[in-house]
Length: 192
Image (tube, rainbow, N blue to C red; front, side, top):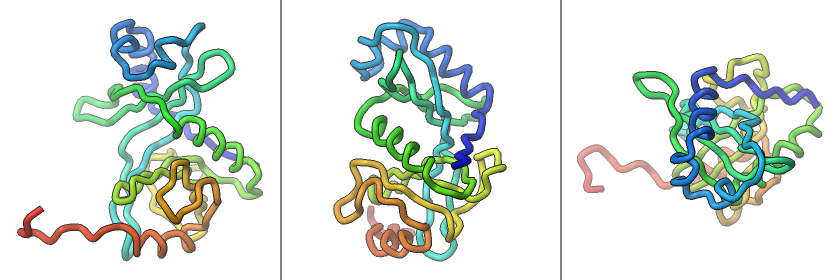
């Protein structure tokens, strides 16, 4: 399958490379796998990270950052995330956990889809859910664009109860499920 991964902004990549080259940033990271890794750590597979802000009506997303898998020798040991500030793209943090392996697995699954798509990550904060978003506009720069009914979402593990991890869903199928599961936003003026 023609799986397209958009290039990350150069400043985002530079910020991750700088953090990887900083003994302090790596030593203070809460990523034992990265601290213990032998050999060079290389950022790979930059994926734009979008947040689903609105589930009902026209689903709204916004770009929240770029996530890079950090590979040492033959395996991904951690991930690095960048975020956009008023001064541009900056390194945010390193992390590890089940989403690393799950992202790689979902990317392998995506290679079997026949249509050209662009790989992105989509976070659904109300459900503590992360998905691989296969966006139909594969020529986009990855920074904008809303969910399309024909786009495919692959929930990463661990997925929320009742939603199977690594089962691809068209947005048109999964969005109604999410609509009923995401708690409503508090009304203005109401206690939080």
